[in-house]
Length: 316
Figure 1 (cartoon, rainbow, N blue to C red):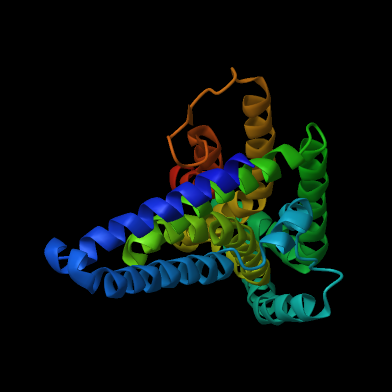
Figure 2: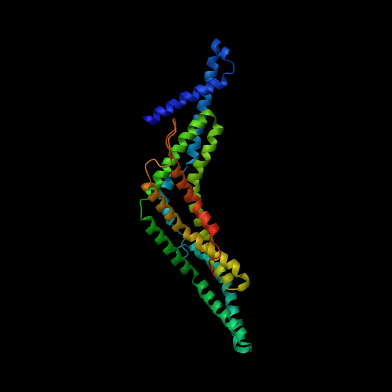
């Protein structure tokens, strides 16, 4: 009931403001021009209302899909063993690289057996042979290794998400969108160009969460495909920095799903234990606006990108 009263008050206020703004000559209004100005104000308000409803509908498209499946989206991983297309793509790089490993193993073995060299050189060659053998095994078993790694990551993510009620985060997202929607509509009634600037944060929340989840999935899939190449590059000193960076990205983007789960747990705990009305703004003619809830949605989107940016060079 309070929301309806606030909406009616805003509509009357906006209609009056538009009436005054459109009326450049108060005397002509008194003499009979007020009808035309009032009609123009009504059209402006109607356009603003229509823009806000259509804009909000597009900005929050598929929000229900995100709300119903958020936890499943966070926990999902590609399957290098179960997916025929992914396994085939990985197989291309495996079959491409294996001959180089075989040649390298043959050459280093020949050097150790038939070429006399100093103890230091022989040690280096033996070390290279060990790396080549290990790399050959890892590349050959890379689908199974990645399947195990991703499965463990998914199970751990599910365990973390089970520590709290994730519906609290979803309710917070809904409340933030409702508050922004009310502001969006009120500003659009004055001028649609003002409302457009509020539509952007609405899109950022809904599509930002969508994007970070599916961006991670796409990047992990791509890194799975080139994982054999990353191992190959990591096996040689002159290409080791590139291979190390590729393997680090594989680990980081996989671990982001655990980070997302931890962020959700942290958000729910903070929101459930904060003092009443903490960081809640109560404007006069708009619904209460929860700054902490808005910050929580933003952290969920930004935190993975910050982690990928900050954590580097942790592999030897």
